[in-house]
Image (cartoon, rainbow, N blue to C red; front, side):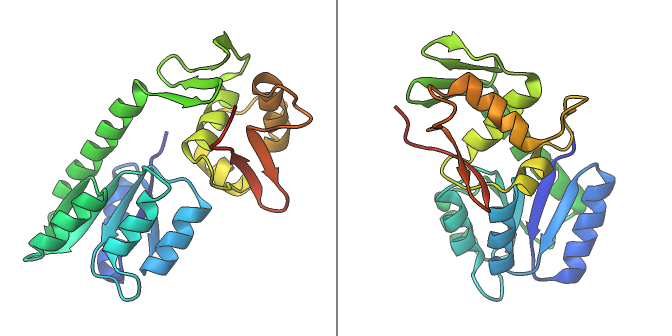
Amino acid sequence: MTDQILLIEDDLRLAEMVKSYLGEAGFSVTVASNGTAGLAAQARAAFDALILDLMLPDVDGLEVCRRIRAHADTPILMLTARGEAMDRVVGLELGADDYLSKPFEPRELLARLRAILRRARSERKSEILRYGRLEIDIEARQARLDSKICPLTSYQFELLLTLARHAGRVLSRDAIMDSLKNHRLEAFDRSIDVQISRIRAAVEDDPKKPRRVITVRGAGYVFAKAQD
């Protein structure tokens, strides 16, 4: 499965170099040239990690980090200029996972990126997400309602998990497909809407009146944070 990386960097020459290098290492990299564009990209799609420059022309990197951390736990690797020790401290306090000073060796960037991804996966592997009576056990790859296992296919579990990890945030169908594009879909049914319907049949008390996986007309789906 290809890791999706969002690189927020206004130095386009550096951004292209990083994108090319990480691409050769097996990553898929989306580039945003300023903080506003980065926040918009992060809101549209689910990324496995972010590489964030602190010196941006509009919204600075610290503010971008703060806004992202308000609703997502995506691993963040900060890029800082030498001498910005206080910014590094503040960035880490705001929730960044690691930092790398410019100029840097591409190999070190790759090593640090892989390290934060490994840590994130290790933490998530043993994680159980709890939303009221619904539990999502990541290690066991099971969803349980009132301790009873919900009948979900592997793909449906991944779809539910993607929504749950972004609880309270509307995900478009395109964002969901981008997040799950490396997972095999059922051979005869590639419709997100149909899969959502089957998930509801498994996890909702009344699938016709869903309270967990909710449709936002014209926008996509949202997993409700507050549940009974």
